[in-house]
Length: 203
Image (cartoon, rainbow, N blue to C red; front, side, top):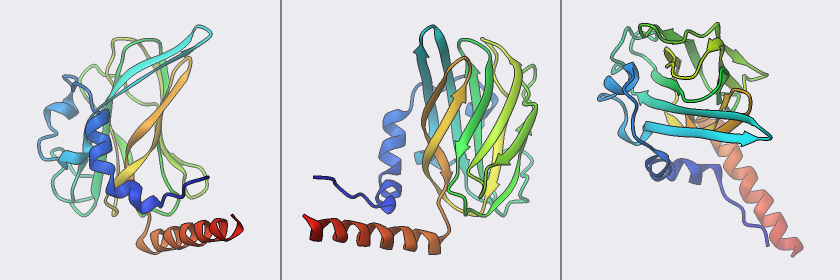
């Protein structure tokens, strides 16, 4: 028997999931300035996987700042949530970092903040129809380096969505990302209820 779970339930469990997935924070610019961030959406996630000799291994610091609390020059002028990430590369060259999006969020600026001798992204952009992800591409992001602070802004508060670090191999975990528009959440919930009730009738 298949169990139906509403997307809204994922948002309700977000704080617990983030705390369980958090590791020890690295000594990066973001972790040193994350005191003003939303506690349930602040931490470090370890990305690590290998397949036939191809590997990826990295720590990703993450923090979501409510409007007006970002500790650097606020790209939204204090009107939006700021979603910030910083990667510590532990293995082979990292080529890309992506954060999943639902495709209907109200999105603002995307970019990076320099952190001394860190790895700078070649590009910071939204990709896919919707878009479906925020992406930062790198060239020469070697083991032992830490990325700039990567960020994007949104009018929506955080939930969790699949995010990926890509090196020789790719590994994905849930990181903070904006909740869809309220109207879309209602439609998603209604669709789940209809789908589940339809399955029950057929059983």
